[in-house]
Length: 67
Image (cartoon, rainbow, N blue to C red; front, side):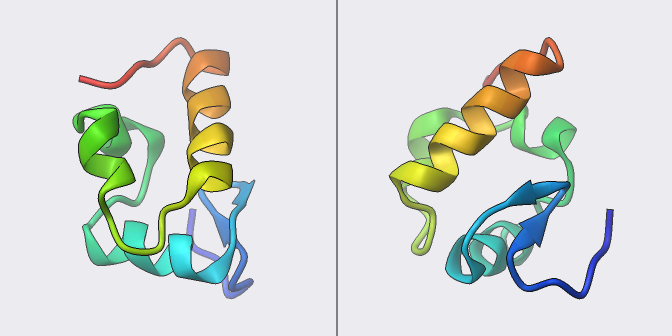
């Protein structure tokens, strides 16, 4: 889901640094994120605790999980 809103990534309201980090790592969807380990995602510069909480919840809501 592409959007011009700097704080929205894949329907989630994350801060701009997290959005840039996710897109910079070619993570455009929750399916993309599910191919990663949580530890590796957390290591991306810009992905902080709040972004991880939102992504964790979105993965759980959609029946996905980290690798």
